[in-house]
Image 1 (spheres, rainbow, N blue to C red):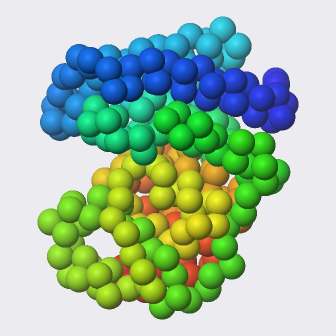
Image 2 (tube, rainbow, N blue to C red):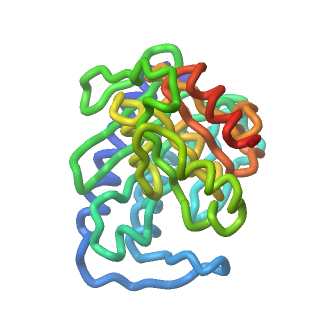
Image 3 (cartoon, one colour):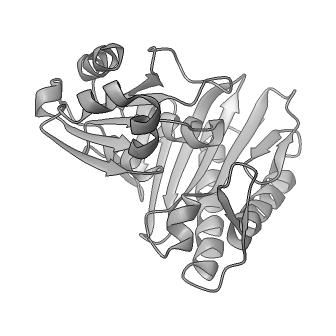
Length: 257
């Protein structure tokens, strides 16, 4: 079995391949379709995932692969790679540069490695379980913020939270020293790098939250579901991340009301 270091090297190479493929389509003429849930799919999503899957099939033929566009092959295998080829397709198709590429490596369902690639920004965040996190090869770590009233809070998918949890949304609007609305993976990357202190997210899929969880935890942060449970393939897609256990506990209390 390849070592984790070798897997990290492969992951960085894959991130480069994905970034080049995505930039080839970005702000170009896109063929756009809509899924059953009305989320858009572009030619770029499918092309990026196809290139990544081909690489993984060549180098890790015995591993499973779970991708957003082409499904789950080898779901019964202990080692699985998980792919979101373009995290933030709505950003991508509207020319907004904060779309990402997500890659995770799981062993027995537990994230061992995660990549948050930001192709338009030329940034690649890598987290390896027990070995720390980097941005373009330079070490990063979360902030030491412990109090919510002093924190920079990002609210992801705020429109959906407002629709489904209006009372929680009202509490969030009073929380933190400052707060920002956002979408997709970049706020989680900013948390890992110490710029953001807490992120609440909602309505995610495993290929959205498992890669970022590996990066955040490797950088020293805490990320769970809204009940404080560890994230796995069966989690419900409601996610809370924070730089410290104390801040995470405050966020959980805020959710509980």
